[in-house]
Length: 197
Image (cartoon, rainbow, N blue to C red; front, side, top):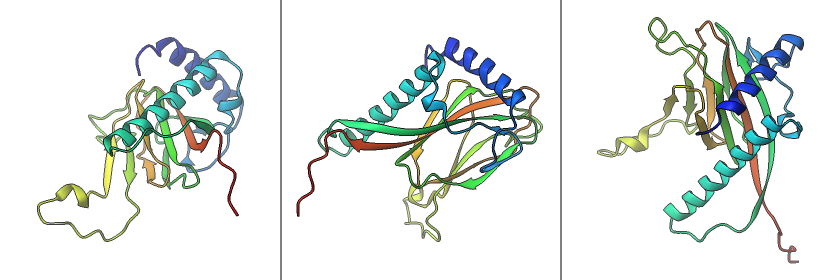
């Protein structure tokens, strides 16, 4: 994401200080620091900016998907979001999990750290799994049998994926902390029609 350097710098300072001052919580993380899921309610400008950027990108993704499927543009939507941060240090990782109650999940890398990929090629890789088991490949259509893909974290990179996809993070190996903001997003109709009945 372009033009996020100043926001990333402030988020880095704030989140590192918070991770030093509080124990955080444990969810899917093994090691590392996990903030309370309240980033979307924080009033500081850097949190407002990151949330607005993420919601704008999710909205653009929905519009792009509709266009690619030759469907009409979606009606006006509002977005509910639950957001948290993670700070990973050497050896930290997350186990397989999903955010099945959300339509979309987002990972944004504030600072990707300095993963030692020379000695640990899978260091900190973000892996996404298709939870459908025993997919029989169609001859000549190998893409349909893909069950996993990975993303190499990079500072400023935004990853948007369906909340029902399982995902995890390989153990991070590096000397500089890796900082990510994660968001579960659920679009809702802005003015839902009254139910019939």
